[in-house]
Amino acid sequence: MKFIAFEGLDGSGKSTLIQGTASELKTKGQAVVTTREPGGTPLGDEIRNLLLRTTGDAPVPRAELLLYGAARAQHVDRVIRPALQEKKWVLCDRYSASSVAFQAGGRTLQRESIDWLNDFATDRLRPDLWVLLDLSAEDAFRRMQGRTLDRFEREARDFHERVRAGYRALANEEPRNWLVLDARQSAAQLQTELIDELQTRGWWP
Ligand code: TYD
View 1 (cartoon, rainbow, N blue to C red):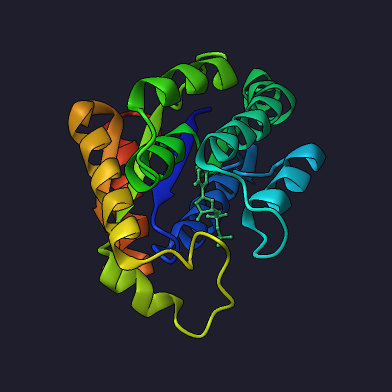
View 2 (cartoon, protein in one colour; view 1 turned 60 degrees about the horizontal axis):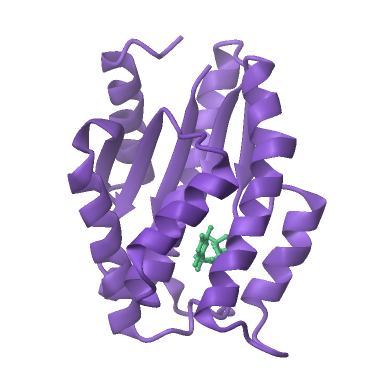
């Protein structure tokens, strides 16, 4: 059982890779929990709505960070830790790295504040592996055409470029803990690369 967090810009293909990986693991008889942030719990889903809606009072960047932190703390205690204790795989769509990429990179809040808050919210629970689906803002925008956009997806191109740069910086800080995949590849290629990595690490059942 391992905890894997998937990160990347909106439209980078996280959900497809998560679903594919979950079904591969299940065919191997593994118990798998797929979950996401913000959300994953009833309280977290309510907070998600406050964060992503495009009407009403938009949170200022510090309030935004704290709301992500609150949803994350609930998610860790109610879903992620219990699943790991039950020896289940946890595949999580976004986790604490999203706050570094979006709130520090995108919103330009101080990195130290985010690191502190992430440690507090996660109670220092870290994934065994981070998977970054790396995509340029230009490609992400192209993929999002025709979708109804949430509050983040409406941000300008340079916001998303800073988010991408934030992710790449994190992956460079700890290359051993990050698998960086070129998200322009096909879903099948991405799936193969991830399973190869898990096999190399001796984690694949
Ligand atoms: P996501 O569920 O990936 O959006 P979608 O349903 O459109 O695929 O994430 C919602 C948004 O929240 C996304 O644009 C990134 C943002 N976000 C942060 O800014 N900080 C965070 O800590 C997290 C978890 C998400």
